[in-house]
Image 1 (cartoon, rainbow, N blue to C red):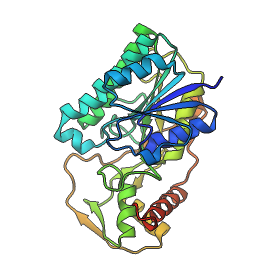
Image 2 (cartoon, one colour):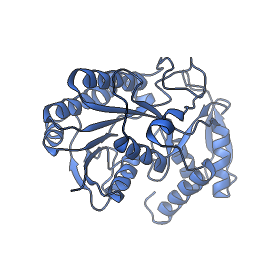
Image 3 (cartoon, rainbow, N blue to C red):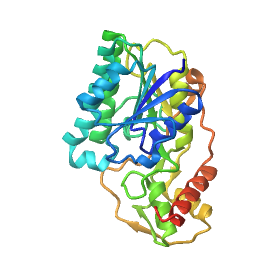
Length: 321
């Protein structure tokens, strides 16, 4: 009998990659997605879509009755700037919605491994050395980061008090096919879209702020590794938290150059005023994931940006970008 997996946000950018990999490994996969940003076209053949909010009674019933071996929780409000403008909205989805799923796992009585998609940039802030390690102090700059850290504390609570099997994966900046080019969060997709339209690339400030860009396929592999690894007891914060990135800092200007190279393009780069409060340096150390999950990133930035650009170019030729 195949293992059963539920992927919240499984019709979205990262979640759809996780679903495909789980299916390829023989899992029975259900998807929980309200389609607010996810798309039906992203639902892989062989997966079953359940349309509902993660905070709804319907979602709780699905989790409680599903007898899932693993729940990969990727549904979230992902826009840092939106969290700044409306912290209550962010917390309602990212904290309260997650608690609804955790309570349903607890009520189910089934041994479900709950894998939470946290953040490897926003959770640490600008007051630690780079690349950051899991045990470093956390001082999030945004409500988004605060919400992710809050959930990690809840994961520890549910592990200690209720015996739940919980894991946190702290992603750096994820990019790849299916990323939304019209949103605020996906700079790689945004740059691809502008290059294809022959429009200038907008860089805020000097463009020297750094991020750790990790390919969506590598993130999917990290989720499956976390689902299948034998892990230490989840006793406290950081014990079962794993950075998922490359450990490499890339400036915005370097990213723009990589995408221009992938596209054979020379659209201009224009500078806009720096955004107040923007994190200046971000990269994560992934040695712990290598040791305990057997996971390392495999996709180089050059190959990943090329594949991502080719995806968006194909979408544009098909008239649906």
